Image 1 (cartoon, rainbow, N blue to C red):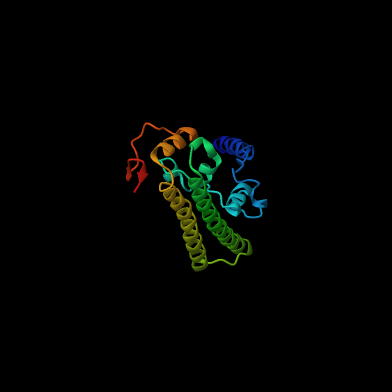
Image 2: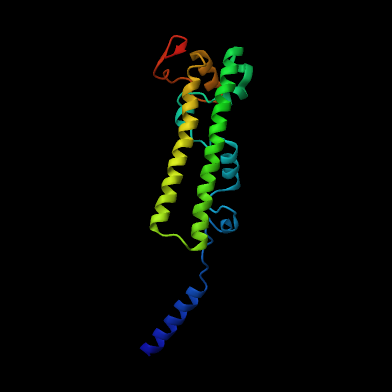
Length: 184
């Protein structure tokens, strides 16, 4: 009788297990992407030199970005000289960011291909990741340094207007180094 009960219990457990469906991974479908670790949007952002949120530490602390300053145009009431300086900064940033973004993509492709081919070991993994990390750091530095440079172009009133126009809290204290109408 005990053996029969155990057999029935085992059958019920087995039936319950076979009825369980594996949950779909949030990564399902990504295996068919050309570059598995990055979305098409991320790839396009890297190719075009966009910031990917890399400069948020600056942007949200009163250090405007040249791209957004240009987008806001005359709403900031900046001079022709300021517009020219902003354009020059943006072009420098863009040139560097596009080159670095393409380098990141090349290394991400190398990483993906190394795994896809099955020919990756700990040493090559470490080297590729170190290269990607260095490039991502340089790319982030590029975006942040141009936000920093914009503090030398705009005056405090323009920075406050930028923050208001971008929807940021303007009640915060001025950033360090802001005295009078110019940054130092």
